[in-house]
Structures are given as structure tokens and as C-alpha cells.
Length: 114
Length: 115
Image 1: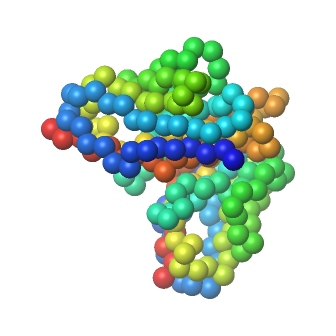
Image 2 (image 1 turned 180 degrees about the horizontal axis):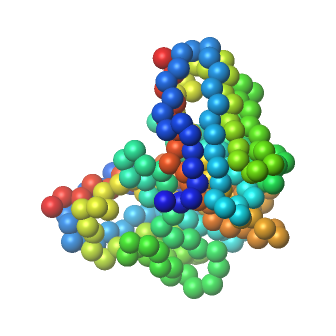
């Protein structure tokens, strides 16, 4: 069955430090992959997506992610974290087999210390 | 702002009641999706409509139903509410044309509290 795993429930970093959020997926074909961010009390904002092509994708707010088929991973990175990046981050895979639904991971809560 | 609107923002009601959540997709988007976000289940897909027709169902209870109207807005109806239905309900929309997969854009959500 298709699934997404985000092994880190909570990550704390200092402002200015680099960030990597992990995401592993289980999917039978080439996946459509997404990272969304949810700030407290807010909806989900799309950070970036991977459909095909270049495995390193750039998103908004200075984020990037790398698709590694051999590792079934799609990790999110940012070279220098800002205090405003504190939020919950969700990795998702788009199920293109029978539906268009998104299958989400459980999320990683990012805390940023000044 | 994603361009997807949801009303109301908050809803507080009692067990056994019925509520309707409303969603307007982005201009030009034909597909509407409903998701439920709860502490114990995380983000779960409920149902998808495409151009007025039901396209896919997920973990949606029989007490819940949805529809998409000719102007493409959608409503999610929740009836015989239970305490466990308290959650954040998101609507998302996408273009979804010609069989090509497209990203989904999410609304701000409706927070439902059942007392």
C-alpha cells in the first residue's frame, strides 16, 4: 500500500542553521511528491513538488528537495533557517492510480530558536 | 492566499447535530477534494469531486456526504455528529485536466468542535 513516512516528529534548530527534514515513501510507480507547510491555525501551503525530470527541485521560501529513487526518499532542505520557518511540515505522495488523493505523512514540527 | 475559500472558519455544535461546510475552489479548477485533519488520524482524504461528479472516495463515514454544484463550489455535510468528528476539515482544488496530475491548493480549513 502507498504510504509516506516522516521519521522525525519534532525537530529543533537554531536560527541560521541548516535544516533537513526526512521523508520516505512507498509507492509502486514514479511518484508525484509534495511538501506542504502548515503554520499554526493556518491551512496547508505548497512548498514544492516533484513530478519528473530534475531530481533537485526548488520551492518557495528558499526550500529545496531532492528525489532519490534508490532510497525512496524526498528530503526537504534549507541552508539557513529563519524564525518564521517554525511550523509543521508535511510530505505527501499523489496517488495517481485510481484517485488523485494525497497521502500524507504524519508531519514534522519544526521549532526555531533565536 | 491559495484562492480556495472555506466557510465557516469555526463551527461549534453539539452531538447528534448536522452541519454543512462550504468550499469555493480556485477559479478554473474543476476538482475539489475534502480532507480531515485530526490528532489521532492525521490528514486523511475523504472524497473528491470532478466537474460535479464524484470521482473518488476515501475514509469517509456514511454519516458524511458531499456534493459539487454547477458553479463548482462544494459542500461537505456531516450528520449525527459525534465527539470524534471534531477536527479541521480542509478543502483543496486542482485543475486536473486531460488526465494529467496537478498539484492541489488548500483552503484555510474549517475547525469543527463537537461538544
